[in-house]
Length: 358
Image (cartoon, rainbow, N blue to C red; front, side, top):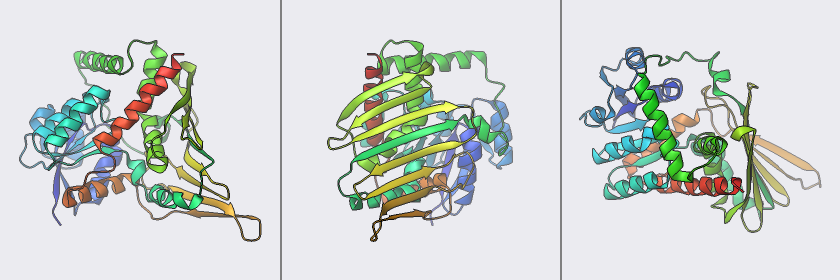
């Protein structure tokens, strides 16, 4: 098998806990050859731990390396677009941690660049959509018959509650103040360009949609298709709790999300037919290889209820995502989580925030 040489831009939490172990597990397909991070401390410690000698503090240097075939973009959100564009221009395949970018303009720039370089695979890191249980649910949707109702639910504790007792993470405590200020300015500018001026809670809502909720809404779109419109959207508690309703014509999909201080992860998708329902239950991604399960509840031949739960395979959704990335490169396929696909999420986010203004 051809081994893809990977350069990683951003060596923080998700890279340390999820991506580097996943790539190590797939060492017959990937080799990490370069790391980049603005934090010298993080860069040195992570590079040493994973025996990576090529170390950079500027992504523009990393994407030029001859021994890098693909780039993982996992640095702060506000910089994603510029790193992706530089990687595409350098002829590198790209896997981007969600969100791909901050607003529609950046999305269109990335889509245009990818179209100009069709030999380059650009894949957005929606790992939940690569989980075998989710793929099984998508295949079984036609068996439901007419859908009556759907539900997207994601209430969970902060990531730190899962990480502190399960992982060792090198933290960046050496970031220059000017870099911190620049990042915040770019975040503010990117959000303002997306939704215009608004109170702090709406800016926080948009950030939450770009982060946690992008997983949920992206998976909803693959499972059910693109909704006709957003019927209703509201936020409470300063934007920490969101609810919405998506119009699918013959049925409505209810959406709800929130973050609290209970160390549990309750994220699921439910789709209801007349005599059958599907439920995909996710677990925290920050503990590797936790099961993601599909439960089917249906009418039995005797008039009772039958419930069947399956876990199609052991493994981690991040590993499945990297496997799909590899196959997309080798087979020259456009990923299902493409830049154009991600743009649809941005359209829904803007519609949701617009309704929240009213």
